[in-house]
Length: 437
Image 1 (cartoon, one colour):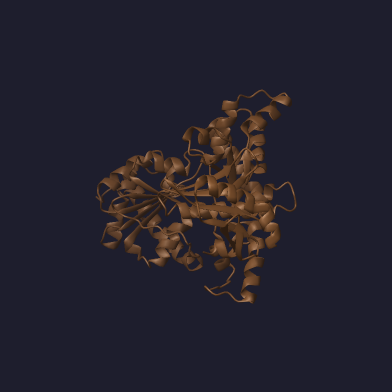
Image 2 (cartoon, rainbow, N blue to C red):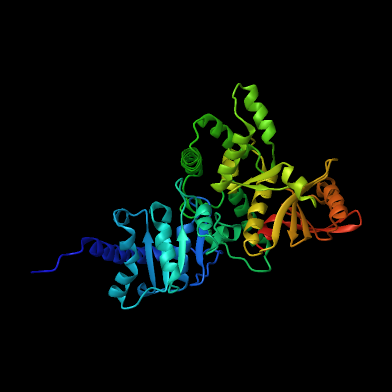
């Protein structure tokens, strides 16, 4: 009598083989990212960030760049139909099936969209405690946002933020090469690409696969609004949620006033509490739709109570919501914020804020390292030195005196040089050059 056939194990083994066969087909087209992951047996790597930003492709990029052989890694996407019917014990056996197939256990385990599996934490904890594999996770859905996946692992996880393509990655995708010294023709190509980048953004579907941006962003916003905010937050008043996403988007690169929007709704006969609006604001931030930047103040209490400036996760998304045809200065400022957010990933003690006084003096970004203000940054879309000085220097000079910071930077569209800021020198750097530093 033949032994009973374990259908599930056969299906899982076949899935593992088929997954790698599929991956071999697409790896040649996987573009490298500037983001790097360093999977380790000692800590779980959790890849977090907005939907459609390329979190899964970071797996693929790591596999490609490190030329991993099939016997070195295990890859499971928990959203695949073949996985949904399996139990956690069967998933745990996948490492044994890997050894049956290849003669060795995997060095790396890549689990994609883990939130789709009810007992994902049990599986991950069990494998992690063995200290035999470097584990990397991704996930993003209304059921469990990627930020929460890192949180639920309680100190056992190192989160890695993946945003849409940086400008440097965008240029690589366009085949534009540059070095430290850039000739005039290349500089013109880079600036032309920058205009496209600010308008279309860096979501891989648009930048790499030429998706039509209006259609892409409409679908993106609908999924984020209804899945990540309304469904997840169990929101009954969908109109208020729609109002909030538009209010946040309209405030990008500006201060967001919760009270102003509360009064606007109240005047329209819509009764909703400020606490509810604040919770909605946090829902959009949790879904990586927007980022909130606190006002800098040496008083933590004053900083916390002040209005926050908001930025969106991509300049293309900001352009999609734009109420005016020309918002180059705001788009440039949003691009600078996103690049600072990328830098912050590699600097544990870096903080990003903005500064404003009661007399209209303002600085777009205050960069704090540890307890010291390290740099003040203004962003402008103009290039004429006289116009730059009139618009940007006053706020820098005031902040420099108050915050005792000597490094002043003005990011311009095209002007490079130095400008006197009331006895202190401000360095002017073109936006394209600053983004490529």
